[in-house]
Length: 363
Ligand code: NAD
Image 1 (tube, rainbow, N blue to C red):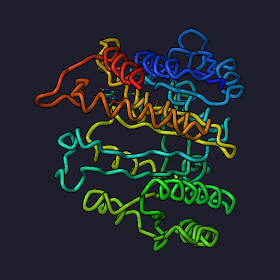
Image 2 (cartoon, rainbow, N blue to C red):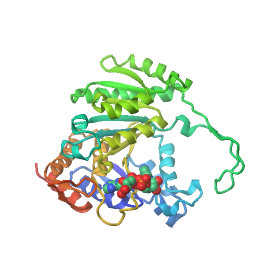
Image 3 (cartoon, rainbow, N blue to C red):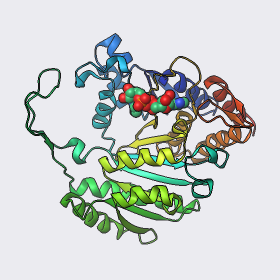
């Protein structure tokens, strides 16, 4: 298992260190190579995604990514900003499927802004298409200065586009995931979210998803408009199992779902290519406001490493062990500052990582 480790900026190195510690305690044949990315790479190598970093990511079986970005790089031209590294990696590695579970551990039910009876026990999976849609359309109507500012423009527009193969492959990821989840006791239901009533692109999306569904008779499929999905996510989030949607709607809905759990520091994500190779990262950013303080929650990154074991390496048992260890430390009352509550014990980043390692050592 060759893993490229890209810690990045802000809290990235702190949370990655804990996830790497957890991986090494599992007694698996793991080899790692750590390389710079984001603002850190820009500062020392002049580019947020240097050649060597891209090569290491391409050569590896999987990438474990911390986070990139810092306000101090906000004035750089867009192409050199740290966040471009993540877009470049998605493009270069062909990562077209973004999987984001939104899970609310019973111990953290109070962290949600919704009533516990609506969210407690929430366990849904949002699958976002990652390399198409309006984010990769043709931006038009621009007359920009070199620093990217608009000069005297009267309009700007971007084109929304999906091809049949792009929709087919993301639909298959969703149905396959629903099948796996069904065998673990979930409903076996895919909700495809679109805006077919207004956008041609999403009428096409709906038709293609329906075609792909024909090969997955045991999984149920329903279609929902994105505005309704945004409402249902706060009204009855547990009515979903797997949600699949396009790049832009997925961007928004996955953040909404993340907030249902009240703790962005808890949520992992996976971005997969057609062969199952993946980039695994926490759903949150580089949190420059708390960087270097040793208080960041490493659990989203540790859970991302568990997703890596599950999806790229097929090591279900090891993934289950890591997730079980995370549940144990929560049940023991350990909390980083972002999730701390009454009657719980406040710990820092390193102590949280150590506790997961200790839980893994108990057979
Ligand atoms: P953020 O997710 O970094 O932080 C939002 C809030 O959540 C902050 O108050 C932060 O302290 C807190 N937070 C985030 N992760 C936490 C953790 N593990 N433990 C405890 N608290 C945590 O989002 P932001 O502030 O909007 O963005 C900061 C930088 O991160 C920006 O430069 C942005 O572009 C970048 N960003 C990067 C990624 C990525 O690398 N994939 C994703 C989102 C944002």
